Structure formats: C-alpha cells, structure tokens
Image (cartoon, rainbow, N blue to C red; front, side):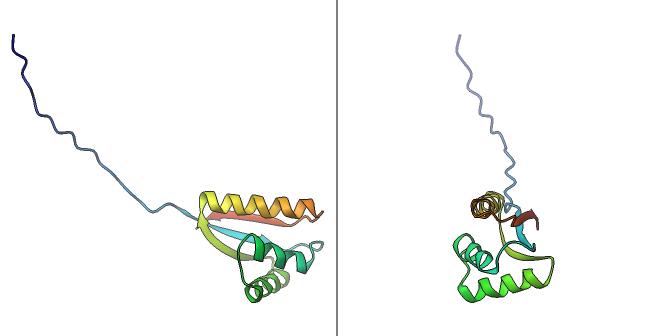
Length: 100
C-alpha cells in the first residue's frame, strides 16, 4: 500500500506587541537623607548628578516623583536593588512601580 503524502500548511497567528512599560516612582519620607536619595538615583537609575538633585528636590517637595519608565523586569529589579540598599543603610525609602 502506497502512502499518500498530503501538504497541509498550518497558519499560526503571531501577535507581536511591545512589552508593557512600567513607571517607577520614589516616595518622600521624613527619614531618608537627601544625599542618600541622590546616591540611589545616580547608582541604580544612572541619573547625572544634576538630574538626581532635581528629582530629589521634586520628591522632597511633593509626595513622589517619577524616576523612569522601564520594562517589567528592569522596573522590578531597580526597585528591589534600591530598596535593598536603603534597608542596608537603615532608611525606610519606598519605591513603587505601576503599568504605564
């Protein structure tokens, strides 16, 4: 018995989208020093000294400030790293992320 060869092409729908972006915020508190906030902004978020000082003053004068917009993994990683650095120094600094 001869085998019949059939040609079936299967369509696959590929729905490629840009990954969601997440806003990272730094929140004001009465205990974390301004110098430490500048240090976090420069070392974790790679801000220049001028940018870091501007953001630090914005946080100090209001409830929170937008630090940057990142993919989910990067946003989570930066929040964790900054929070860990703050805890090691004994500061209650709080950072959050939320979908854009």
